[in-house]
Amino acid sequence: MKTGTKKQMRIDRRKFLQIVAVAGAAGAGWTLGLSRNKASYKVVQKSEPMMGTILNLTLYGPDRSVLETAIETTIDRMHGLENILSRHNPASELARLNHTGTLYGPSRDLTTVLELARFVNDKTGGAFDVTVLPLVKLQQGGKVPEQAEIQKALALTGFQHLSIDAKKITLARAGMGITLDGIGKGYIVDQGVETLRQNGFGSAYVEAGGDLMVTGRKPGDQPWRIGIRNPRPSSSGELMVLKTSNHAVATSGDYMQAYAADYSRHHIVNPRTGYSPPELASATITAPTVALADGLATAAMVMGHKRSIAMLRSMPNCEGYFIDKGLNHYQSAGFSG
Image (cartoon, rainbow, N blue to C red; front, top):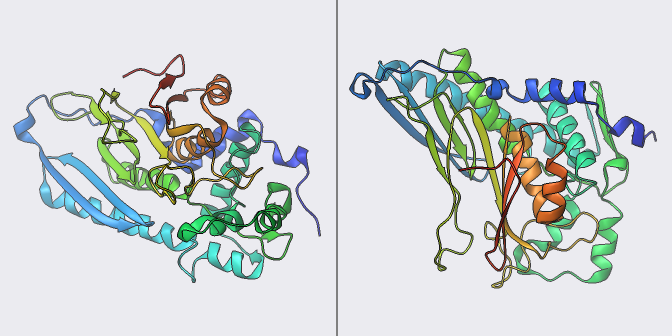
């Protein structure tokens, strides 16, 4: 069976920009030209369960009924994507691929996400890998897996065993599986923002489980304020607050799904070792799209702050902020609040 070569897995800068454009043109810098008179604008907020978390949308405009219609249209689009990309929905494209090992006629959305995942895998030296599902399943439920189980799962992990094209997606080994938990949610947020843009709204806040995009500015020409969560709420200390517009932000952390009281085991696993990475408590990435920020934040948890900062130097318009388990803070040169 034919599998991707290293040459095929590499994506050049032009291809990367094409993927970012399809994944969501939210980084293009849309503005709505909101009036400085805040009273002339209504605000509509909506929360909705999605992808195992809560989707939150905030939209400004002069007509409440138009805002509500735009939000409902956006939610419908995002739920449609969830039905393609969620491994938990047995009828989704991804679930069918995981079940059979081959998916014929995949949607453009699925192939786009997988190509972006391949790019992030290449840029991070394999730290981000959507084929880690067998390893992730071993960690769930608080069980401490045996070494033999980990070795078996590691043999089913690796982008070299995944073949992607417009006609067919194939998993080369029986027992393989893909999880898009570390990038699919970001893509869905990007497409939600794109739906709002297509409906004439260039100023919005769309967030799902800590992955978000803000476009335009708030009424009064004010930037959006995004707080970075303390990974250990019981501890004291001031944390970063971002003031930003037209930016994607994604945070990955050991606290989101911890399987041990000391956070030594959690939902993120190193694709090379099968164990949860030991250094970071959280990693926050800003990027042109949420899908890219989502994937890079997951990879950063595996890589640690030094390798992540070095990697970000080669990533245009991408920056990072990292907190280790001792609550020490590190950031890339261009990251600012």
